[in-house]
Image 1 (cartoon, rainbow, N blue to C red):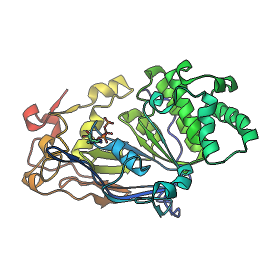
Image 2: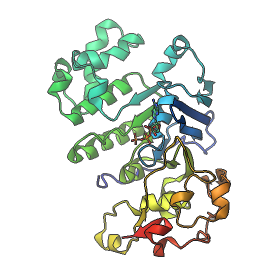
Image 3: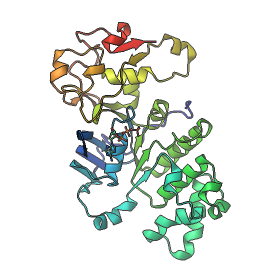
Image 4: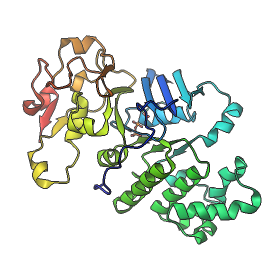
Length: 359
Ligand SMILES: Nc1ncnc2c1ncn2[C@@H]1O[C@H](COP(=O)(O)OP(=O)(O)OP(=O)(O)O)[C@@H](O)[C@H]1O
């Protein structure tokens, strides 16, 4: 997608500003799936924090474990290790019944709105459902509240009488957002909320999400492949590779100075709006596919595709190190303010056999 709005001003109350309890705190999260050939380590020790009113972008290749993190956070999937705390309450092992009152505090918006909207219900019923379930509005006030919510997502009152199939993809995603807003969540998990939409409507839905997030001040875990979208929306970005976070940094910092070779490759593939700048950009093309989470490479998971890997990377798993400026990186060789220094070829001159090539 193209840039759609000026970058939002830093939000008040974001984490690292001394705000009290984070809206989300995930510690050492694991989701391992038993499989015939062993164990799929879909999420393998992920820790992340989201402050009130803060947007954390979660990026990485398909299959890196992003959606599984989101599903574990809202307990649509059961973590096999670690913990999830919502506003300071550990919800990792809460029963369904004990979780119910907390369902107004967090909400998940899916990639494909069609799969989450019951085709037999009217839009009015769909938007009213959480209001009814959580008894947030008296029955007599439901219709007015639904129309108000529809207005807030750019739809008209008469949309309440239609069914999901009568709406466009963009309108259906607006309905998902209206449903999410209805409960006034402190945390929204948005899993690829625009990727199933036509490119022409992606920007408007993303703008809407950004405006709502800023007005309502909810924390947001924004899961996406779209680097332009995450740059636009997120305060901080965490990069996942094969079930682990390999780098995390404030958004501008990550784009200006990615430290992990995987982040560097990911960003080098993102289109730049300025064609002149685009021509000067070196594209780092990673060879090979993401290895299977059933048999992740030993040592650093990324070493099989890394252009600068050294022997140590093949045997020793790098810890996610804290760096100044709110950054974290899991690479033996990455240091802020200095180039990567491995034995391998530099990214600019490496060949496909060395793990990367340039275009
Ligand atoms: N229920 C499951 N059983 C077994 N393996 C699973 C299950 N759910 C996910 N996985 C595996 O876990 C890994 C991570 O999947 P996940 O969907 O979280 O990745 P992702 O980064 O969100 O990918 P995408 O961007 O394509 O949605 C994949 O290898 C996937 O095949």
